[in-house]
Length: 167
Ligand code: ROI
Image 1 (cartoon, rainbow, N blue to C red):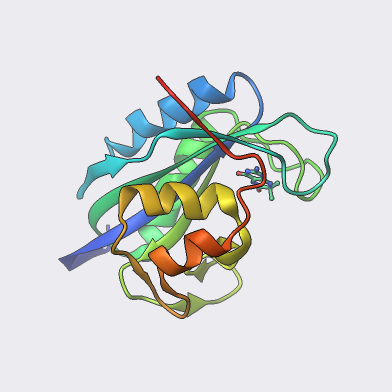
Image 2 (cartoon, rainbow, N blue to C red):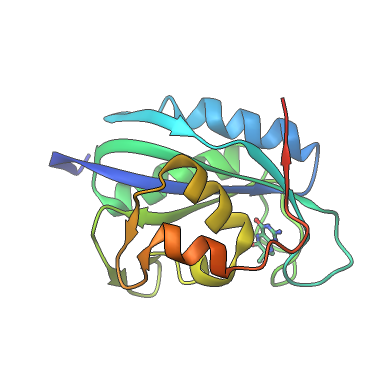
């Protein structure tokens, strides 16, 4: 397994709108806590959000996890995809269609990368309230490579009915 000598702060976006999304997101948190060479530092509240993409799909539950990891970015991506698959993710649906579990690497340290399999920081961050609000909740001091300070980005993004779910 490719490993890093150093510990990197990685922020993972979690989304689900099928098969009890609340349960899917909670299950994902448990699995994230088990990723090797990594530690789940903290996680945001769960949020209910309006679907981005085709509107004829159920609302989403979204959250963000903050991991401290020694995994390099690609091995980390493989771990996330394994968790998605384990929780019944299928990839045959329409573009931006409903999904049981989506795990995205939002930010990986101060690293910036773009290739066919992966773009980091995640290209959608800037315009997505369901990413920016939970990200701001977990780390108000976060600096996002190429985009800037979370505390400037979050208030500029329309909340679009995003609601924090209390446990
Ligand atoms: N919409 C919301 N609200 N939350 C998501 O996590 C989400 N994920 C997606 C698309 C289909 C773009 N829409 C979403 O992948």
